[in-house]
Image (cartoon, rainbow, N blue to C red; front, side):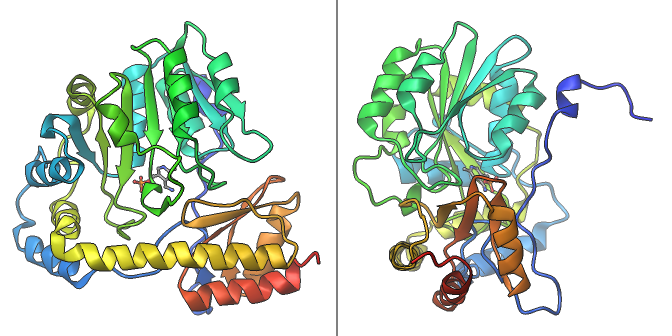
Amino acid sequence: MTVKHRAAIDELVSYKPGRAPVAGRPQVKLSSNEMPFGPLPTVLDAISHAAATLNRYPDFHRVELTEALARRHDVDPSQVVVDNGSGALLQVLASVIAGPGDEILYAWRAFESYPIVTAVSGATAVAVPLDDQYAHDLPAMAAAITDRTRMVIICNPNNPTGTVVSRVELEKLLDALPDDVLVVLDEAYQDFVTDLSSPCGIDLVGERPNVAVLRTFSKAYGLAGLRVGYCVTRPETADLIRKSIVGFSVSTLAQAGALASLAPESAVELKRRIGHVVAERTRVTDELIHLGVPVVPSQANFVFMPMPDGPAMAAAFEERGVILRAYGTDGLRMTIGATEENDRFLTLAAELLRRS
Ligand code: PMP
C-alpha cells in the first residue's frame, strides 16, 4: 500500500546517478561530471581541523562562507545563499516560486533534476526541445512563455550536451519576460567555459531584477562529495530562499572545506586543474572527430556524443572497464577525466564507435 500523495510524483522518473565502479574491478568512472583529482591538501586540513567541533551544530547562516563568496563575486552578502548543493537550491527555488497551475519552463534535454523539482513543486513542466545543434533554442523558449510561466531554467553550459547560450540571445529572452518572472541560470559548469560570447550570469544579476545564478563546489572545485552549492541573486529573492531552506543543512565540514577552497592559496592549483580539463576536452573532441564519432563541441567538463544506441554502447564500454552515461536514444556522455582515463576511453572509442 502506498500512502496518499500527489499524483505528479507517480509520473516522475527517478534521477539515475552515474554508476559507481564495482569493488574489485578496475573501472574508470567517467559518468558523473566529477573532477578526477582529490581535494586540495589545504581543504583536507581545514576539514579535519573543523571535525574537532562536530559535537556542535554548524553555523546556521554559513556567515564566513557566504561573505567569502560575496567577495569572490563582488556582490553583497545579502545576495548569496549557500545550501547543500545547487540541486537543493533549485528544489527550494522551484517550490518557493511555483505551484499547481504555474509553469516552469526549461530546455530538453537538460539536467535530469529539472522535471523532478518541477513535479515536486506541483507546477507544470514546459520542456522546449534543444535546437539541431543540441543548444538551447532561446527564441522557441521565448515563444513558449505564457502568463502562467513563473520560472525559466537555463542550464549554461547545458548538461548533458555542453553547449552554451550567447549573451545576446539570452538578453533577448530576458527582454521578452516580465521582470517578475524568475530566470535561473544553472552555471554548475561555468568555470570550464572558454567561449567569450557566453554570459557570466553573475554579471547579469546586477542588471536584471529577476535573475538567479546557481553555482556549485561539486564540479571545478572538485568537492562533489562535500555537498555545497550557492545562489547569487537579488537580496529579495535571496530572502525567499533563506526563509525556506532547511536549517543546518550545510555541515561544519562542508562549510570549512568550501571556505578553504576559496582561499587565495588554492587558486593556482584549481586553475591548473581547470586548464587540464579544458585541454583534455579539446584533445578528446578532436580525437572523436578523427574517428568519425558524432560529438557536440563542449564548454563543460564532459562531451556528448549523439547516437541512437547510447545504452548498448554504454554497456559495451562498461564491460571493458569504462563507465559512461547513456541518455536513451539521444546519446552518450563522457566526463573528461585524468589523461590516462581519457586515453583508455579513446582506445575503446576507436574499437566501439569508430565510423571512419
Ligand atoms: N546543475 C547541473 C547542470 C548539474 O549537472 C548538477 C550536477 N550534476 C547540478 C546542478 C547539481 O550539483 P550539486 O552537486 O551542487 O547539487
